[in-house]
Amino acid sequence: MSDKDDLPARGIPAYSLVDENGVSTDGTSASMNTIRSRGMQPICEVNSSGVAVSSSTMNQLRSRGIRFYCAVTENAVTSDAVTLDTLRSRGIPFFCPVDVNGIAVGGTATIKQLAAKGLPYACLLDSSGSNGPTLNLSASTFPENSALNTVIGVLSVTGGTGTYTYTFTSNPGTLFNISGSNLRVTSTTIAAGSYPVTIRADNGAGSVIDKAFLLTATAVVGGTNFTAVRISHLQW
Image (cartoon, rainbow, N blue to C red):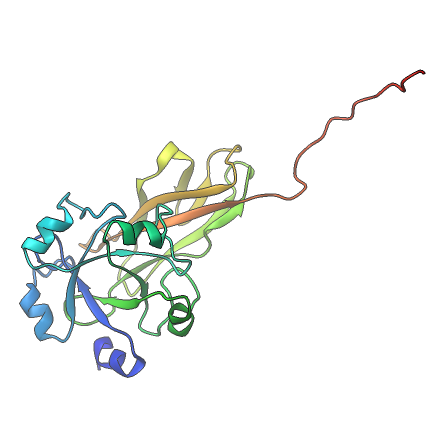
Protein backbone atom coordinates (compact mmCIF):
# COMPACT_ATOMS: atom_id res chain seq x y z
CA MET A 1 0.00 0.00 0.00
CA SER A 2 1.44 3.37 -0.95
CA ASP A 3 2.00 6.07 1.63
CA LYS A 4 -0.84 8.27 0.41
CA ASP A 5 -3.34 5.49 1.16
CA ASP A 6 -2.36 5.50 4.84
CA LEU A 7 -2.51 9.26 5.34
CA PRO A 8 -6.28 9.94 5.40
CA ALA A 9 -6.73 7.64 8.41
CA ARG A 10 -4.00 9.63 10.18
CA GLY A 11 -5.64 12.96 9.38
CA ILE A 12 -2.71 14.10 7.25
CA PRO A 13 -3.32 15.91 3.92
CA ALA A 14 -1.16 14.68 1.01
CA TYR A 15 0.37 17.18 -1.40
CA SER A 16 2.77 16.71 -4.30
CA LEU A 17 5.11 19.49 -5.37
CA VAL A 18 4.93 21.08 -8.80
CA ASP A 19 6.97 23.84 -10.34
CA GLU A 20 5.65 27.22 -11.46
CA ASN A 21 4.40 25.61 -14.68
CA GLY A 22 2.37 22.96 -12.87
CA VAL A 23 4.77 20.10 -13.65
CA SER A 24 5.89 17.69 -10.92
CA THR A 25 9.32 18.38 -9.46
CA ASP A 26 10.31 14.73 -8.98
CA GLY A 27 11.53 14.26 -12.56
CA THR A 28 8.44 12.39 -13.81
CA SER A 29 6.85 15.40 -15.60
CA ALA A 30 3.46 14.46 -14.17
CA SER A 31 0.80 17.11 -14.67
CA MET A 32 -1.48 18.56 -12.01
CA ASN A 33 -4.37 16.52 -13.39
CA THR A 34 -2.32 13.34 -13.06
CA ILE A 35 -1.38 14.21 -9.50
CA ARG A 36 -5.02 14.87 -8.61
CA SER A 37 -6.10 11.60 -10.21
CA ARG A 38 -3.75 9.84 -7.79
CA GLY A 39 -5.46 11.35 -4.76
CA MET A 40 -3.10 14.22 -4.02
CA GLN A 41 -3.19 18.00 -4.29
CA PRO A 42 -0.54 19.64 -6.49
CA ILE A 43 1.12 22.62 -4.84
CA CYS A 44 4.04 24.94 -5.60
CA GLU A 45 6.44 26.16 -2.93
CA VAL A 46 7.22 29.87 -2.64
CA ASN A 47 9.63 31.70 -0.39
CA SER A 48 8.67 34.10 2.37
CA SER A 49 8.34 36.90 -0.19
CA GLY A 50 5.86 34.86 -2.22
CA VAL A 51 8.17 34.07 -5.13
CA ALA A 52 8.54 30.59 -6.63
CA VAL A 53 11.93 29.04 -7.28
CA SER A 54 12.19 30.37 -10.84
CA SER A 55 10.85 33.83 -9.93
CA SER A 56 7.15 33.50 -10.70
CA THR A 57 5.02 35.64 -8.40
CA MET A 58 1.90 34.57 -6.54
CA ASN A 59 -0.29 36.41 -9.05
CA GLN A 60 1.34 34.49 -11.91
CA LEU A 61 0.80 31.20 -10.07
CA ARG A 62 -2.84 32.09 -9.45
CA SER A 63 -3.34 32.91 -13.13
CA ARG A 64 -2.08 29.40 -13.95
CA GLY A 65 -4.40 27.75 -11.42
CA ILE A 66 -1.49 26.66 -9.23
CA ARG A 67 -1.87 26.59 -5.47
CA PHE A 68 1.16 27.63 -3.46
CA TYR A 69 2.45 27.68 0.11
CA CYS A 70 5.49 28.65 2.17
CA ALA A 71 7.07 26.02 4.40
CA VAL A 72 7.52 26.80 8.09
CA THR A 73 9.22 24.87 10.87
CA GLU A 74 7.52 23.39 13.90
CA ASN A 75 8.45 26.66 15.65
CA ALA A 76 6.33 28.64 13.17
CA VAL A 77 9.11 30.43 11.27
CA THR A 78 10.37 30.17 7.70
CA SER A 79 13.90 29.13 6.75
CA ASP A 80 14.89 32.82 6.79
CA ALA A 81 13.21 33.47 10.16
CA VAL A 82 10.11 35.24 8.82
CA THR A 83 7.16 34.89 11.21
CA LEU A 84 3.60 33.80 10.51
CA ASP A 85 2.32 37.33 11.05
CA THR A 86 4.57 38.54 8.24
CA LEU A 87 3.41 35.74 5.95
CA ARG A 88 -0.21 36.59 6.71
CA SER A 89 0.42 40.27 5.97
CA ARG A 90 1.82 39.22 2.58
CA GLY A 91 -1.11 36.92 1.86
CA ILE A 92 1.07 33.81 1.74
CA PRO A 93 -0.48 30.48 2.86
CA PHE A 94 1.81 28.31 4.96
CA PHE A 95 2.05 24.90 6.57
CA CYS A 96 4.58 22.72 8.30
CA PRO A 97 5.70 19.68 6.26
CA VAL A 98 5.37 16.40 8.16
CA ASP A 99 6.45 12.87 7.32
CA VAL A 100 4.04 9.97 6.79
CA ASN A 101 4.05 9.33 10.54
CA GLY A 102 2.86 12.86 11.27
CA ILE A 103 6.18 14.11 12.66
CA ALA A 104 7.44 17.55 11.60
CA VAL A 105 10.19 17.27 8.99
CA GLY A 106 13.46 18.36 10.58
CA GLY A 107 11.87 18.39 14.03
CA THR A 108 9.98 16.33 16.58
CA ALA A 109 6.53 17.92 16.93
CA THR A 110 3.54 15.69 16.17
CA ILE A 111 0.46 16.78 14.24
CA LYS A 112 -1.39 17.19 17.55
CA GLN A 113 1.31 19.54 18.81
CA LEU A 114 1.29 21.45 15.53
CA ALA A 115 -2.48 21.77 15.68
CA ALA A 116 -2.21 23.06 19.25
CA LYS A 117 0.11 25.79 17.94
CA GLY A 118 -2.39 26.68 15.21
CA LEU A 119 -0.05 25.36 12.50
CA PRO A 120 -1.53 23.66 9.43
CA TYR A 121 0.46 20.66 8.23
CA ALA A 122 0.71 18.32 5.25
CA CYS A 123 2.84 15.48 3.95
CA LEU A 124 4.73 16.04 0.69
CA LEU A 125 4.80 12.99 -1.59
CA ASP A 126 6.21 12.36 -5.03
CA SER A 127 3.84 12.21 -8.01
CA SER A 128 3.33 8.47 -7.55
CA GLY A 129 2.00 8.97 -4.03
CA SER A 130 5.09 7.69 -2.24
CA ASN A 131 7.15 9.46 0.36
CA GLY A 132 10.14 10.51 -1.74
CA PRO A 133 13.72 10.97 -0.57
CA THR A 134 14.15 13.40 2.32
CA LEU A 135 17.27 15.33 3.28
CA ASN A 136 17.84 15.32 7.04
CA LEU A 137 20.14 17.15 9.42
CA SER A 138 20.68 15.52 12.82
CA ALA A 139 21.11 18.82 14.69
CA SER A 140 20.85 22.49 13.75
CA THR A 141 21.95 24.33 16.91
CA PHE A 142 25.43 25.08 18.19
CA PRO A 143 27.01 27.43 20.77
CA GLU A 144 27.99 30.92 19.65
CA ASN A 145 31.68 31.44 18.87
CA SER A 146 32.25 27.70 18.56
CA ALA A 147 35.71 26.40 17.77
CA LEU A 148 36.72 26.19 14.13
CA ASN A 149 35.31 23.07 12.39
CA THR A 150 32.92 22.27 15.23
CA VAL A 151 30.40 19.74 13.89
CA ILE A 152 26.85 21.09 14.04
CA GLY A 153 25.09 18.01 12.71
CA VAL A 154 25.25 15.10 10.30
CA LEU A 155 23.48 15.08 6.92
CA SER A 156 21.65 12.03 5.61
CA VAL A 157 18.98 11.07 3.07
CA THR A 158 16.11 8.74 3.89
CA GLY A 159 14.12 7.05 1.16
CA GLY A 160 16.82 7.53 -1.48
CA THR A 161 19.09 5.15 -3.34
CA GLY A 162 22.83 5.23 -3.93
CA THR A 163 25.40 7.49 -2.30
CA TYR A 164 24.56 11.18 -1.88
CA THR A 165 27.02 14.04 -1.84
CA TYR A 166 26.16 17.28 -0.07
CA THR A 167 26.84 20.85 -1.15
CA PHE A 168 25.51 24.33 -0.40
CA THR A 169 23.30 26.24 -2.79
CA SER A 170 23.01 29.09 -0.25
CA ASN A 171 25.47 29.79 2.55
CA PRO A 172 25.37 33.51 3.49
CA GLY A 173 28.78 34.74 4.57
CA THR A 174 30.26 31.25 4.01
CA LEU A 175 30.01 30.72 7.75
CA PHE A 176 29.62 26.96 7.37
CA ASN A 177 31.10 24.12 5.36
CA ILE A 178 30.37 20.49 4.59
CA SER A 179 32.95 17.78 5.02
CA GLY A 180 31.59 14.47 3.78
CA SER A 181 28.25 14.37 5.61
CA ASN A 182 29.32 16.61 8.49
CA LEU A 183 28.07 20.19 8.65
CA ARG A 184 30.67 22.37 10.38
CA VAL A 185 31.32 26.00 11.33
CA THR A 186 34.10 27.85 9.50
CA SER A 187 34.27 30.91 11.72
CA THR A 188 35.10 31.27 15.40
CA THR A 189 33.10 34.50 15.70
CA ILE A 190 29.54 33.44 14.87
CA ALA A 191 27.28 35.46 17.14
CA ALA A 192 24.09 34.14 18.69
CA GLY A 193 21.25 34.22 16.16
CA SER A 194 19.66 32.35 13.26
CA TYR A 195 21.37 31.64 9.94
CA PRO A 196 19.42 30.26 6.95
CA VAL A 197 21.25 27.92 4.55
CA THR A 198 20.15 25.69 1.70
CA ILE A 199 21.85 22.34 1.16
CA ARG A 200 21.73 20.08 -1.89
CA ALA A 201 21.94 16.28 -1.83
CA ASP A 202 22.78 14.62 -5.16
CA ASN A 203 23.21 10.88 -5.76
CA GLY A 204 24.59 11.41 -9.27
CA ALA A 205 21.77 9.32 -10.73
CA GLY A 206 19.02 11.91 -11.10
CA SER A 207 17.91 12.32 -7.49
CA VAL A 208 18.61 15.89 -6.38
CA ILE A 209 17.13 17.32 -3.17
CA ASP A 210 17.38 20.98 -2.16
CA LYS A 211 16.33 21.79 1.39
CA ALA A 212 16.51 24.91 3.52
CA PHE A 213 17.64 24.70 7.14
CA LEU A 214 17.70 27.33 9.86
CA LEU A 215 20.94 27.03 11.83
CA THR A 216 20.83 28.58 15.28
CA ALA A 217 23.80 29.77 17.31
CA THR A 218 22.78 29.76 20.97
CA ALA A 219 24.02 32.33 23.46
CA VAL A 220 26.60 31.06 25.93
CA VAL A 221 25.61 32.20 29.42
CA GLY A 222 28.61 33.34 31.42
CA GLY A 223 30.85 32.82 28.43
CA THR A 224 32.24 36.36 28.40
CA ASN A 225 35.86 36.72 29.43
CA PHE A 226 36.50 39.53 31.91
CA THR A 227 39.83 41.25 32.40
CA ALA A 228 40.80 41.91 35.99
CA VAL A 229 41.29 45.61 36.73
CA ARG A 230 42.91 46.97 39.87
CA ILE A 231 40.92 49.81 41.42
CA SER A 232 42.60 52.17 43.90
CA HIS A 233 40.70 53.19 47.02
CA LEU A 234 39.56 56.75 47.19
CA GLN A 235 41.29 58.85 49.82
CA TRP A 236 39.11 61.25 51.76
